[in-house]
Image (cartoon, rainbow, N blue to C red):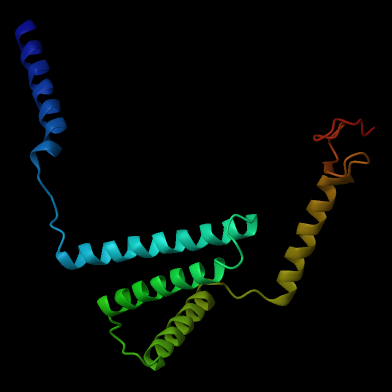
Amino acid sequence: MELTAIFFSLAVLILVGVYLYAPFMERRARRVTEEEHEFSALMAERDRVVNSLQELDFDFKLGKVPEEDYPAQRASLLQKGADILRKIDSFAPSPYGSDGQDTEARLEKAIAARRADAAEAQPEVSDDDLEALISSRRKVRTNKSAGFCPRCGKPVMVTDRFCPSCGKSLT
């Protein structure tokens, strides 16, 4: 009996070891193309320019940047950002062309599909049923609420003896 227990534990130990070592044996290094690398660098540069613009505006509001230097520095950063955005746009041209008609048509189609999905998802409820639901909900809410605390103004329940926020006695 001891020998089978030892072999069984050894087998379990080997299986656990193989399971834990399996990720190290797989080499799934995805090769990044030059195009992807350049696009990633452009996106990082865009983020740096946006952060620099935010810091410049913040420093100007604090009075750290002189008023005569601020417009030139801001214009320079805006120009740099616009150049980067042009490079990003030229990198991944829109498959729908430069005119917005295809984009607008796709957008309208997506909106219509959403409206159709929303109409299908909601069951038909008559106005009378809706009014009954609203009145029952109001009745339940008014039974639970006792108003507001006279000291702090926070809402209190009927079952509260003391305000849960400030501790004032409500009796």
